[in-house]
Length: 400
Ligand code: ATP
Ligand code: MG
Image (cartoon, rainbow, N blue to C red):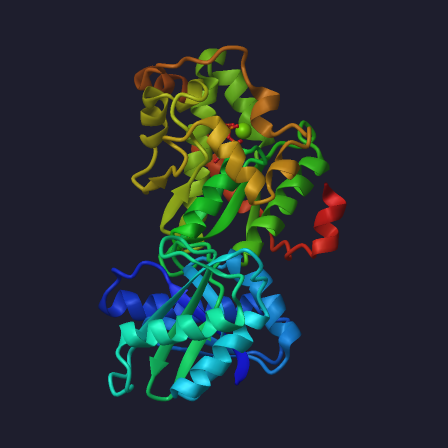
């Protein structure tokens, strides 16, 4: 028996042709990057699944810890490979089960016979194998629906694959297989979740953050960098562009009545983001907006904001409740960073009340008294770009 392989199953089985090969190529690249620290691992990709090999069991164990955060994987299983003969399959099945907790567990055998020359048909082999296993593990309880242990046997010409455990993958599509965008990242709870969900759909991104020193502190910037480090764990290197936003915000406060200043602020952010998007070869803009959450996120407000660009604005949280968003933020480890109390630029300058139905003509009118284009240009050119590296586990624990 050779117990040195992990079999990886893909999601999105409906992908066809070139999309499929791009998916597989990208997934292989991303898994390789995620498992970078494991020098002994080799990989082989087929159209519908991938194999990881290593002769060091501790490397495979580490891979089992890392793989659940890689998008594009539906599920994976450590497998034992043996000769495709009844005798070898029987003895290997017992060996595989001997490494599993069997006491009081429900159980079923499932056989997939890809090599049709195998002397027993699927049903016969399932029965034969089930009986054999039960003689050695009489404590197992046979159960056809949702058994706790599924002994899965796949018979190929070159060998039989045997596994007793299926680990759930992250699903989605490999990061980078669906284009590159720019995430507007505030440091609040929502925008990191928006970024995560787009990564899940295969989008990689740069991030842009608007900072208004001295009203926003160095610590607020640190918070955004930490969020990026945490998001990087899901399979992408993320560049962060920090935009000096103070002058623009002060000009907005001066020119635009307070109940419309939030709309103008968002419009300015969008225009700056759109310029940076172009310069970073990104396709869309991603925000953490959720319909009706605050005045600037009503349909009227979103329409007024959208007016400044034709670029697709991706708003993956648009239909989600705050509680659902928080649940995801907790799951992906950004929540504890987001709730650190440092002010972001909008909270500092937020007026006490904003219009939920801003009239675009009025907004345009007030904006016309100032040459905002030049200020936008300055903000774009004044950006500072950093690439926060991934957090180690220890660094992350220290943050909490
Ligand atoms: P978040 O939790 O993401 O801050 P929010 O519910 O607080 O969202 P707003 O503050 O209205 O909502 O911001 C809406 C969206 O605008 C954010 O999700 C984010 O994409 C973008 N945004 C807001 N402030 C900033 C900022 N300082 N830098 C970059 N993007 C920002
Ligand atoms: Mg916010």
